[in-house]
Length: 479
Image (cartoon, rainbow, N blue to C red; front, side, top):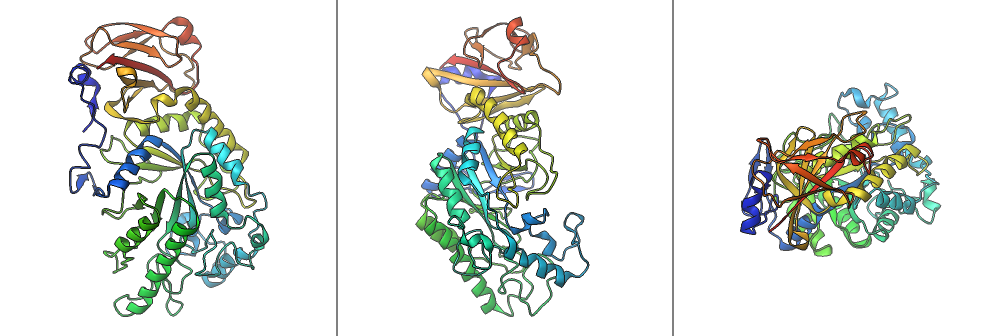
């Protein structure tokens, strides 16, 4: 249940404040919205952690592995599905796969500097990181004992580097900057003989043998997977999020039962309150939903996060073009206004660094958030969410006894001045409501109209806004 700007006075005098999901998803055994099913957790530690996670709003996703050397889509070119976005460079599949696997033998990201990334992410206003510890190809970016297909294997030239266990180094660097850490982990593993058995061809992304006929082989794959998860939860410090990809691996799909209940319980025994995101698999272990590379058209009344590519593909590609700062900032505002978080992906290059354009983009977003973060962090969705060029958020708590809302004006391309008048689409309001710009000094006069209060923006403030890309109006009223 959400607060509504359409009934501010009723809320003010009742003294009742509602969060976006608090009364809805915590009280229902499951909820269905459109094609999505959300089934909330019952563990109080997880629920508390989810509430904290919803305050963070902005995170970093990084897809990185040996495939970055070729500048191709991560993993998918070794899958036999016919997709135009992952064509192989040679026609011989077996020869191509051998060359792909051999990328381990030349992977040497000597410019790897996780502290540089962590500083840039913090300056950008990001509050958490999710790193690809293992993608579908099975290459481990951590020092697992289960396979030699890993960055720390002696055959990989980077293994001699003192920081070769890059997952540990990344988590440590980001924690030192105060960010949460999340482990992306692929449930399917196309390198494991217990998933893709060399005895058979590999027609698609799924396990390539009948589990009912070879249950012992599948049991060993489950054990292999649980062991890797246990390593990540045991040897890499505090982990906040376990972000499981490869949603086709679930017991309803060809019997690919990964024993997620046992996996989650064991992980939380090591990491109490751990948020588990079993992506695209309806159930209690999908603690939040993850629309991929899209922003929902409407507000969603459960925890969710849009994972979005900042430029090129998920993995590094040459000559990638990045989003503009304006588009990124306005996308963040759009997502937050609808109750979600933005997880923005940056793909490190084969040398172990980001493109200069990625650093520049994050720096510009950080400049905006430094001035306007009050309207983003720790907020919740509030009706009407968006109206025209305005997006709305609500402070979760009432600072100094004031109920506080924000109207964020989203200028179109080449719009550099604020309008002289801004109409807030509120049907009811109190004459003592106080409106101001989020510059700490400009209070706004207003007059009533049938559409809502009409705010007058002083000419000097309108001509020279305190920031670019989006402008924030604060609305305050005593409870």
